[in-house]
Length: 125
Image (cartoon, one colour):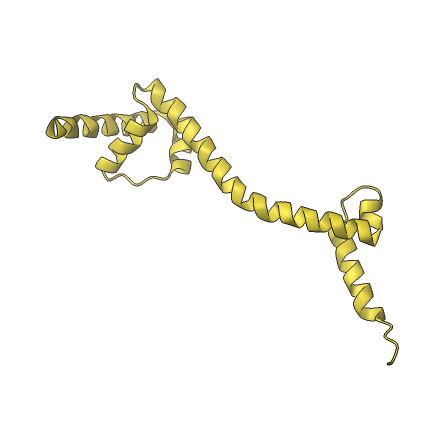
């Protein structure tokens, strides 16, 4: 069986891995084996956390909206329910930004939600 030297393929693979490990410290950026293990772990965490980030931001927006809504006299679930009744479709990211940067408009949304809840409540009773 002929001998295989693998010069080009191996060098290209090593260069790709070491380029990905460029910002790491010590042997993690210089030695192929250590860099390869570190890169594999880093890519795994990056994949997982791209999904986790979406959950964490939604949770943050809900917390901010809840705090702002409580300052206006109702709670988060009532506010969202009132917006759904009023057929106002604004996502939580925008609601959170409104609560921080435009409190007057947010207060108007809260009053609209409150009115719709009160309008619907007697019909249910």
